[in-house]
Amino acid sequence: MRQKVRPQRVAELIRHEIAQLLTKGLKDPRIGFVSVMGVKLSPDLHYADVYVSLYGTEQDRKSSLVALRRSAGWVRHEIGKHVRMRYTPEIRFFPDDSLDRVYQLEEVFERIHDEEGRTPMRRLDLDEIVAVLRECNSFVLTTHVGPDGDAVGSLLGLCHLLHAMGKSSVTCVMADPVPRAYAFLPGADQVLAADAELPEAELAVIVDAARFDRIGAVALRIEHTPRLLILDHHLEDGPPGAMGLVDSSYAAVGELVTELFEASGIPLSREAGTCLYVAQATDTGGYRFSNTNARSHRIAALLHESGIEAHSLCARLFEVVSPPKFHLLRRILDRMEFAASGRVAYTYVMPEDFAELNARKEDLENLVNYARNIEGVEVGVLFYALKPGETKVSLRSAPAFNASAFLNGFGGGGHAAAAGATLQRALEEVRGEIISALVGALEQDS
Image (cartoon, rainbow, N blue to C red; front, side, top):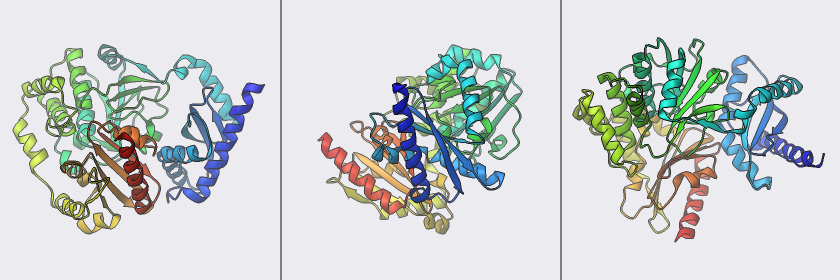
């Protein structure tokens, strides 16, 4: 009996804190009337499943749940300030129809998947992944919100691999549209929106991300797919019950997918090579970033041999800048400020800037690098708000500073040299807190 007291007490404290945050701290307009019905902690206290009653229309309830799940990192950060634990548990939101019924279903699920439930993610090698792909017949593929070149390129590259295996039921879906810069990629016009009608699938695959809260509204569409495969290279693991390969030594997930072609013995088509070259070239900054290694160049050679027009692709990716992106660049350069004796450079973009310049979120891609590239700067930061009350933070750092570890404390993550976070607060408030924390972290490392 005594061992159950502490989890129950901590669960009640977490329930109370989240209820307070919903009342006073969480300002996301998508969240309607929500009641926190209960919290259930995993036996190791690493996960807190929060059951909420959602009100309104079906669309209102879905929007509220998506918004709650996307704010889970921030909620965890806030709880960590008030509930003193050695490890603040990961927050997972679930709709509650009847807590008793949910608990009963969970107990059944835990008995069936007891082994998987204790293992965060079953790790597979390339050959094992190929075997999984061959044994399944229907697939839904997705990637993270705000997709970049690696997200779109690796998603479409995997789609081409599955078609080459003879799979006919392959659906690509993303929460956000394909950015204009990558709309030319073979198969990009077939990517569906999150609210499209999706066929049933045996296997869901998430590329370039490992968490449900990174794929936006698509999470609701695939969470009940029988099997989940993760292909990623960020510094985070997949959810319990998933399987896959997460390896940060890959400069891009496009490299991993290229090696899946090799492992399967299927030649790279020109179409697949084009998609995967864009994935690799964009995530390595044209093979200039520190994540580029010898394997990257070997894989690039394979992609060249598929018949791609690399010079044309590079010109399109790195030399052509849309007018909205050009004007955004001018604005962020005008607003550049410095801290920590020039070791930090930071700038920002407001919601009205997007409207005024006819720009989109995709036009921000890689603009944070201009802050990092200034001589003497160790950490470059871009703050941007797509809407009031929500601020996104993008960091680029020198090898000596781990950007992902720093942003973990704010519910974010990514790579050691490139990371991001989303906070449900005004940009001015977030900017002051992040820069102050950065200065303190750099001074501590000196």
